[in-house]
Amino acid sequence: MKCIICHGDNIQMTMIQETLKIENDLVYVPISISVCRSCGERYYDRKTMRFLEQLYQTLRKEKQMNLQEIGKILLYSCDKVQSGLNQNRSHL
Image (cartoon, rainbow, N blue to C red):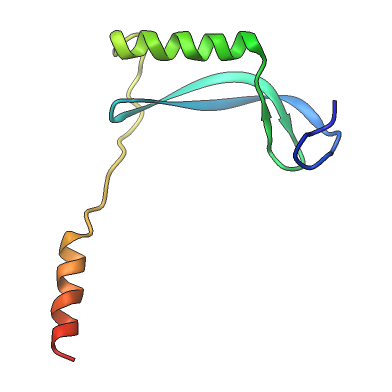
């Protein structure tokens, strides 16, 4: 099999962590798929896609199913920085 992106032939089964976004949460799902070692293009077979789609639907309904909290995702608010920049510009 050749990569459709870079046309390389170094495609191997690789364990990756697919990310599913469920509302404001990210769920990492370990799966084994074919990945091009040259450019990183991922190839999903039908069985894997069906599994991910079904898991996504299930997690939307039953959020705590076999999930382990491994950290937090934090969002930096630029409001204070932006207002500080605007104040500094007004002095120019």
